[in-house]
Image (cartoon, rainbow over all chains, first blue to last red; front, side, top):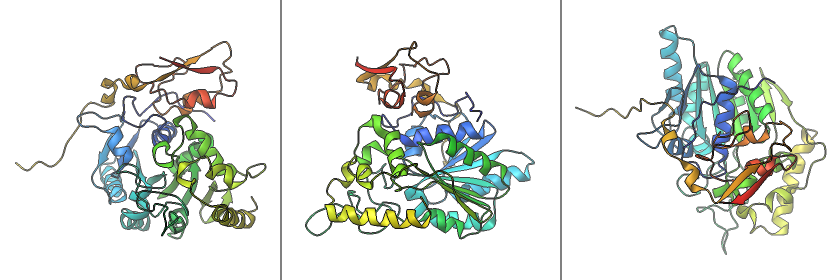
Length: 287
Length: 80
């Protein structure tokens, strides 16, 4: 796979050392090229890349509000089309801006069939405001609003399955990806660009600050998620589902969980429950 | 006049902000050992390693991902 040398996200941004979101955006923009207009929801990415009066973006970029990245992307796409301009519109939103706050606008954009790519960079909580739980926080994770204690053990609800909710809209392309598998991710972004109509990519992205691991381990954690079957790489093209990466030998989920502070409080019994859920899904998908 | 928002007219202007000052540990690459796999280039959150594997210390925050992901351990993290 030919990978562009050009960078479209400048250094000097305020992301934490070891930030996974900026890795994801760099890779996506390398796959898309210069003729791209980006939209961001409110979130880490918006805050770290655009500390006024500076911007890290080397392509046109717009931010309006937390809830409407998909609506803004729809408007930009339609305006460019009306003006006869050919540019790819891509929206980047976090899991909060996608699974919770922006879900209505996203659903509307998918329904209307705009030719946009929507990439959710999923770090599994509201990291920008201090690690509050979101609909995409996984079962068992400790966040500041799902703390473990006498009356609770961390997040008590399963992770909301946004890619499948998107697939249920009947859009031409839905995929999951991970920053730790750059070729797989970039191929999916390129495919999303080639497809006429809305495309949704759900990008799993470890967060050193919110998950509690050493900044050097960002990529390793993303890899562990996939190698343990905790995060599955697949795509759904015109309704056809297929897994794009299968670990040679699936690792135990414990290896992924115990490498992170947010799961450290889990008892053996709770970790076994998580392993059981992962096993059930992986067996179904023959992983 | 109603202020309708803010517009930043200079693309990539965060380059003014030298995040290298955040760094505690510095990645040092031994180019003799390098096998040209591009892992460090692709996985750098700052995008501050170029195709010739020169690390831009003006921006490197010292996260250590490059050293961690180097398959031949050609990058060492050193204090300073």
